[in-house]
Image (cartoon, rainbow, N blue to C red):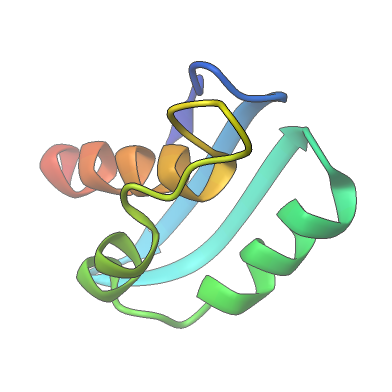
Length: 81
């Protein structure tokens, strides 16, 4: 599933699930080290656990962040499954 994040530097988030487990995440754009780190940390994690950990995280003065947008992408992917 491809998700277009809002209010962050990254332009797209590609999410692949295997049932209720995150198989892979790829950010297009954004802070490369941070987004690559997030992608590796959530790989193999249950979707609901990742959402719970990342939802609501902000970036500086922005009301959202790449982790928060990933949580939104995961919610959408879960709904579409």
